[in-house]
Image (tube, rainbow, N blue to C red; front, top):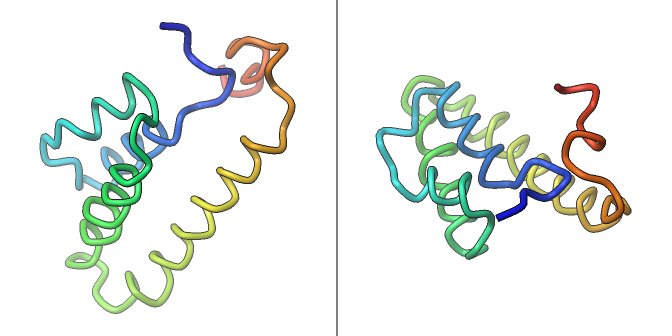
Amino acid sequence: MTKPPYPRLGECARAMCIALGSKAGNPVVDRLAREGDFDWAKVDSLIDDLLAEGVRMPLGPVADEVFEPWLQVVHQEYCRLVLVMPLDAVDRGQALTSFS
């Protein structure tokens, strides 16, 4: 399976879960990162359950006031960028040259 020219939302969510220590062996995270965004309801649930809830305990009220709204903006902007940016003619290496 060829990866799209941009990191999948599942890949981004997995990286954030690992960075925040909220992955906790969740197989859905790995599947979304590996196979792609096969079920948007699962992506939304993953973001709510592992990212927002995962940081609520260590951050306390800051999670609801700052992190969760930021996470929603990141999700919306990611979707907007992927849907607007014409990347269908390039591969991942070309699209992500500055990140490689």
